[in-house]
Length: 119
Image 1 (cartoon, rainbow, N blue to C red):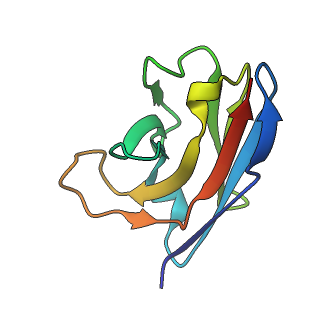
Image 2: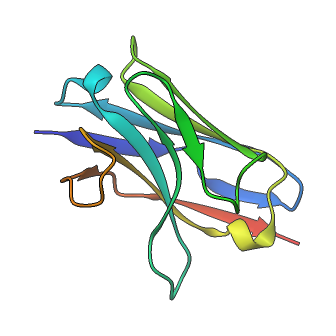
């Protein structure tokens, strides 16, 4: 079965950086679009970054210019480099895989990793 495992979360001061990773198995990774979602307590999960199988990227306005999504097809891994972190970035971060970026397309989900940014 498909398995996505996030890692790299932790605690960091405002202005600092973290790098998240998502290791993927059980699917043909190179054919899937990969996404990172952010879920703030009490809020709905929000798509913040995506990368297509061809390498095209897109970002939510809240993270544009600060976060970078990338993928390594040889290692079946997707990364999220998070720079200039802000307290409002505090959330659980999830990775997801989908054959299409459409909302209705089924997704495989990881378990999430906590990121806490202190002021």
